[in-house]
Amino acid sequence: MPGPRIAALIAIIASWGTGVAAGAFQLIHVEDLAALIAARPQRLWIYDANPPSVRRREGVIPGARLLSSSNHFDVAELPPAKDDKLVFYCANTH
Image 1 (cartoon, rainbow, N blue to C red):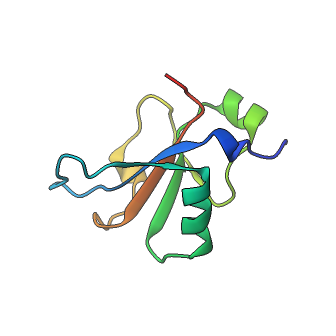
Image 2 (tube, rainbow, N blue to C red):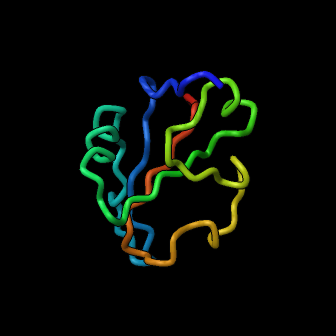
């Protein structure tokens, strides 16, 4: 499998609690995510929202959890603590 092409990564980071305020989502770039991973936070979850074909072609960020679907997934796939930080990434540029 080729290495992930995370240079073009734009991810969304948020806490997923039910009281998420407008603007609570933050777009981050590859350098931001690399620094976040390097800091080794206890409650950071990274999710790959790509379909399997993109994962095979582009690779997966090490440690990322694979969502069951790039279009729909069950919230049971997310961590139980609603104040954890979640990062979702995909190769879709639209």
